[in-house]
Structures are given as structure tokens and as C-alpha cells.
Amino acid sequence: MRRFVEYIQTNRSQLLEEWTEKLMRMDEQKVSIYLSDQVYTNIGNEYINLLISHLMKNETDLSDKISDFAQKMVPLGWNISFIIDSLGEFEKVLNQHMTEDASKKQQVQFGWDYDKWVMPLNKEVLNHYAASWQRTVSLQKIALQELSAPLIPIFDNITVMPLVGAIDTERAKQIMDNLLQGVVKHRAQVVLIDITGVPVVDTMVAHHIIQASEAVRLVGAKCLIVGIRPEIAQTIVNLGINLEQLITKNSLQKGVETALAMTNRKIISVGE
Image 1 (cartoon, rainbow, N blue to C red):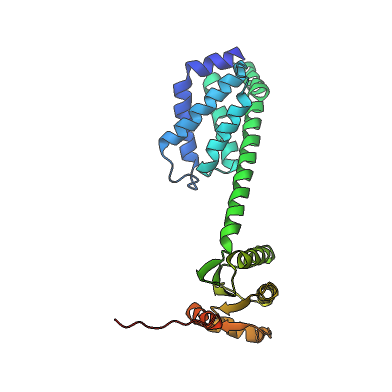
Image 2 (tube, helix red, strand yellow):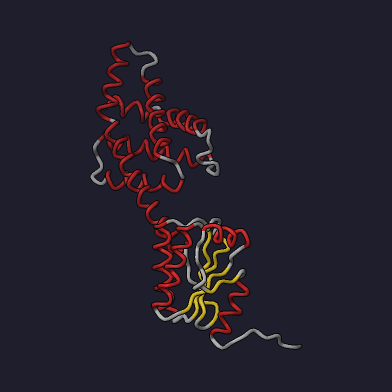
């Protein structure tokens, strides 16, 4: 082990330079297209610091440092395969340098020593990285869900929920939750569900919209479906979907005018 540490410390600059050059060449698919060369150097430098601390066993809080190291890599956008390949490239660089003038016996010994002393560190780095990545993805998913179906008050007692993108069962549940909570929170009397940004309205999507409208009615508000484009209307007719019980408008503007009328208001032009 001491041979490992002494060699890494003595040849640190050369090892780091060759390793970071390999990492940048590996980035053929532009995993990190916006990263500077210095980022690769900083990450490599920090890994070598962790490796030396691990080999010397002189850090009582090494696990915390590995966790911090892993969390720093998550925002870089590197996937787990890239991390594994990167650590493998460091092994190749170190192996090449340490065995250039060594015998076959010493080369075999290097592989055994590396597996024994370095692989445990790499395994812990990967575990922390995977956990940090999963936490980040979960938080992003929650944030996207909250933004995916916002209920926006536009006038007193009138709110709009603009929908964009495909609607599946999971998202439909989120829409329903946000809709009902928003109606109560904003004391809405009229809710406009704008489906202008929904690319396809099939039987399932229409069913979810009808359910949402019925839920709004049960909490004491009225629901308008706006943004029904001609192609959407034709699809609804061809599928035999019955929207007769719903108030529908072809644009958000028409929907707002109707909502104002339903709350005893209207838009008027004011002369200069």
C-alpha cells in the first residue's frame, strides 16, 4: 500500500494530466459540452485526494467527504456509466506508469493490490453518486409535477389551468389534486382548463377531463374547457366522446369572456 501512495504522490501531476486528457477524449457524446477543462482537473484532483486519504486511512470523516465529492459531480450531468469508465481510465493510467519497467509478476501484483485497496473506494464513490443522483431526480420530478398543472388566478373567482404535453394517468391524478386544492385556495367560482397545448385528446384524456370537470362541480365551482382546436374537435366526434355536459370554447379569450359573464362581469372598451 505504501508503494501505491508514494508513487501517486510523487507522480501526481503527470497522472492527473494524462487522466483528465483521457476523460475529455471520452466525452464523445458531449456529456459535458459546457464544462471547461479546469472542471475535469478539479474533479480528478479531488478524487486523488480521496484515494490517498483512503489508502493512508487517516481520515475519520472520509465517508462524508466521498458523499460531498459525489454530490459535486451530480450537477455536471455525468451518468453512472461515464463515472465507471472514468475510474477505469485512472486505473489504466496508474497501471501503465507503475508497470512500464516492472516484471510480469509485479504487473499481476498491481492488479491484485488495486482490487484490494482501491476498488472499495470506487465502489463507495459509485454508491454515493447513485444515491445523490436518485435524490436529485426525485426532487426534480416533484418540482416538475408541481409546475406541470398550475392553477392561475386571472380575475377574482376566475382561475385558469393551462395544460401542456401528453396526459397520462399519473399526471391526470396530479392535475386533479392541483385543481381541487386550487379551487378551494383561490375561492374560484369558474375554472378554465386550457388544452391548447395538449397534442392529442383520445378517449383516456377526454375521460380525465370529464372527471376533472365533475370534481370541480362537486366542490361548488363551474368548469369550462377551452382551446379545443378543429382537429381536436374532429377527433372527439370520431371517437364518439360526449362533451355535451361541458361548456367548451375554442380559445382562452372566448373562455375568459364566458367566465366573466358567468360571474356577472364583462369586458368593455374604454374611450380615450
